[in-house]
Length: 212
Image (tube, rainbow, N blue to C red; front, side):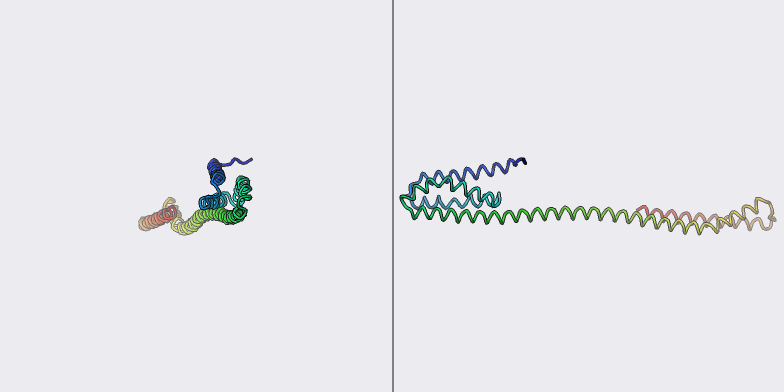
């Protein structure tokens, strides 16, 4: 069985005490004290409404049944002294009970709506979290794609100066260059090396942007 929260038990106990107190006080007050007797009797609407608002329409029904059982002996006694007053008490108890049940139905609907809203909020939070994660993954994938494209472009640009350096170095290594052309080949090596250095620096800057 589910455990009833302590706070709920306390509220139920207070309502029960209030119902018993009203029933006992009404039975003690003489019927000749019409005003006080009617005031006490009309106060029964309070526990009915509270029971409906706190525990729903089922709580209002329970409060009504307990009240009727407790006050029925007093009403029965008054029936022989003043039947009209006893009938009024019964009718009013019925009206108060119906009011409590209506309040309980509205309270139940409001609680169900709150539960629905909370469930919707949690679902939206879950969707938002998933969306954020997907956006991060998409950005990461876009960065990888851009980095791959940049690497491919860089490899293409490196191919020509690297071929020039390789060819020139091979010619110089074989000693097939005259002294007049040696300076020209060395200049080619210097220019192509500087070009490669610039390409690598540009690549480094581009990769640092993707890392942000």
